[in-house]
Image 1 (spheres, helix red, strand yellow):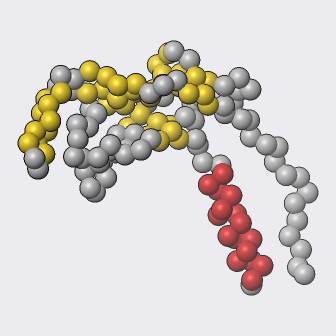
Image 2: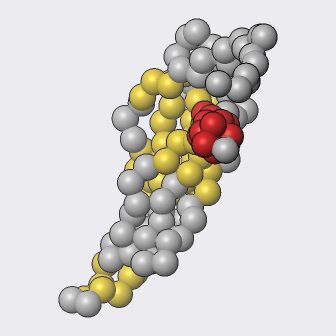
Amino acid sequence: MKKLLLLTAGVLASLGALAAPTLTADAVPSTGVQPATATLTVNGAAGPACTLPKAADGSVKPSCDLASLAPSATPYTLVLTYNYTAGCVNTPTGAVCTDGGAAASAPFSFTRAAKGAAPSNVQVSPQ
């Protein structure tokens, strides 16, 4: 029974390793101006779609699914951009207004490695 539990735990832990790569960034607190959208460029061209899910505290945290990027030995160059809509946000001490526009990260590299070969001749034997 103990070995079955360890095997099950190992299989469940390995599922996380098979998950699609996702780009996330620090949350943008609700106390400041929040982006209306987030976009990702890959090697200077439009990249995968990004979402801005809102947390219970009102902050937003960008999430971009990188599953569509093919494995490559050459690194991709990514840039995450927040797009802001003109407007004002009330704060406890006043209001913060923005003209709108965009704010981009510095370019950064991402390499998506190919999956490893599946193990062969895997056996579980009683001990």
